Image (cartoon, rainbow, N blue to C red; front, side):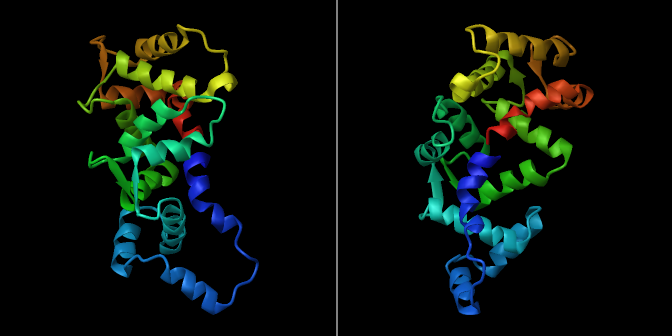
Length: 215
């Protein structure tokens, strides 16, 4: 989670040891978030109001307009993976956060997804992962979709990929997953097949959640 969260909350680690009340009030005023908005997000997420304020300050710092388009998202994301090509993975991740499919991510979109990934239940996290892999949003994951995501992860990790990337490694990775997950051998994975297989296999669980470590 470090890449996205780190850049948006870095200023909280650099906060001065002591600040007077006036400074704190001025900073809070710059959040520009109506109390009822925070109340609603607090109810919809697993973050406290204070955590939401901190996240919003970081979000506005990186995205003054309050909206992130895909190009900006890719630019921010690429800074954390200088030895690889993160563009395709960032594209898929952007689409997963863009739940309204309007080509932009607002703070609510970002914080709702972040809440699931950081503090959601196991099932909620697996559902989010499933939707990331379901590129065409038809409710299923096929081999081509999973291969695209796995290849994007390898490309992003670049020279630090382990084991060293060969041309057929992503496909082998996907074939191994499908052999275990696709119980009825129909060539696609349903949400329930995906969740059950991950819950039954600890190694598969760690592998399928690799994206959490590269966020």
